[in-house]
Length: 267
Image (cartoon, rainbow, N blue to C red):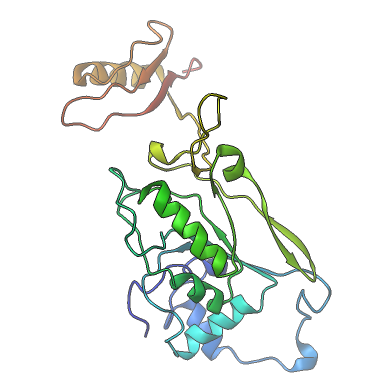
């Protein structure tokens, strides 16, 4: 059985989980093989393009040293796809950069050789925009770009400017061309890429997806929440008397509720 925490890159692979004992392992080890004549043709056999789409890659150790049959059969599935993708949540460097004052939850870092482990596993495309992109500042992200490129992986989502971070990057296959656009909706604010304003340089960073959250409640719930937020010092100054308030002001020793609060006028 693989050691816990080896890699979560494959946890989201086609909705299956577990290296041994779970649905994936049972499917790979216990399902009887159908006769060749009865097997449905694979998409690639029919001229279609196949894709292996996984979740987050949080890898700090080598993958290529493991020989468990269920694991290797899963690797074969990834390698057999025309395009295999994962979300690279690691920064690859040798501690040249210093950590940022704010991380994406913890500071993610691995040896630069981990990029080649992803290639060994069959991956060809990686997303770079996520909550850990800025864990080690711009220099950490730049070093990761360097090591990922040297491994031959297509990468998108980080750039020297907002325009570059938003660019699509392409994987060419004999079945067609695949575009990758990477963006993140959750990240420390300093990780965002920015544009040049002529007299200022563009800011390197990730491709951000920004949005506003609105909580719709009944009038009774709205009044109760507004009273509670006001007592906690977390009520914004907008929307007096019109059924709309902005909860964003921080209170001491309490995390603020962020988003717009609106009463349902039908209630």
